[in-house]
Amino acid sequence: MEEEIDISELPGVGEKTAEKLKEAGYTDIMAIAASSPGDLCAVADIGEKTAERIIEAARKSLKMGFEPASQVFERRQKVAKITTCSKNLDSLLGGGVETQAITEFHGAFGSGKSQVGFQLLVSVQLPEERGGLDGAALIIDTENTFRPERIKQIAEALGLDHRKVLENIFVARAYNSDHQMVLAEKAKDIIKERNIKLIVVDSLTSHFRSDFSGRGELAPRQQKLNRHLHTLQKLADVFNLAVYVTNQVMARPDVLFGDPTTPIGGHIVGHQATYRVYVRKSKGDTRIARLIDSPHLPEGEAIFRITEEGIRDV
Image: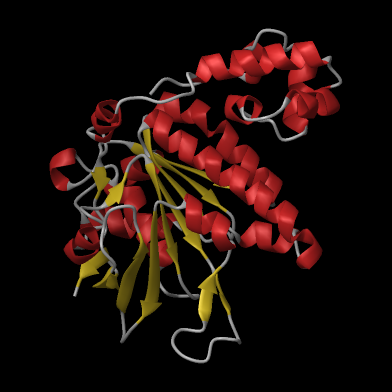
């Protein structure tokens, strides 16, 4: 898949107009292609004819329209998988964590979401015959949970030089939701340079939850979260990489039977995540992962362990 051009490269869009559009939330070509001339006129202070030309140019650059299913099938042949180092968990996910997709793990504190992310940061660097992609990784850390000491443990357990493994993991600490979104939007620069094959966001929703509190803030929160997820999906598609995100859960007092928790982010995260996995604690170091949503895999459960060496089977 070809990488799309920047907004400023569209005919009729100068630097000032591009800046105004980006400030108003039109951060990519798709957002412009799907908008109306009236919307662009209002936010960018341009004439209707100019707005129409910009929208038409955006649509042409994206080649919007139908394509044969054979082309979709051909793109799907490039999909690769990253091992979690648990055969049970890999099997649940159809062979591992998939490229061109967003995989979300949600669960309570201490359920092992971050540990799976740490494992993937190392696993992606393995050769293909060992379940990796011979690639580097980047992590957007929103809760200050990244620990290089843990990466060292996992790498050495797989017989890898921990110094090289750490050099191939690029870490950015996000301090609020806007910073988190900017980091994702700027990631394409480092992706090209460093052969990034995995993006981890740990956690996806914590900043959005704290920055937008109260019912009155729900709509703007969801809009920004939606845009952030679209950015991550686009990176996954354009660069054929995997996106792994962790998510928090909240209590639902109205649920009388079954598990009274639900993932943060509502339908926005539910629709945008390709694979959704609910993970919960069991006895000792054992965890139970349940696949609750997938385009083609059946619902099911897998049991795995969190050990000093990383993620392993029971």
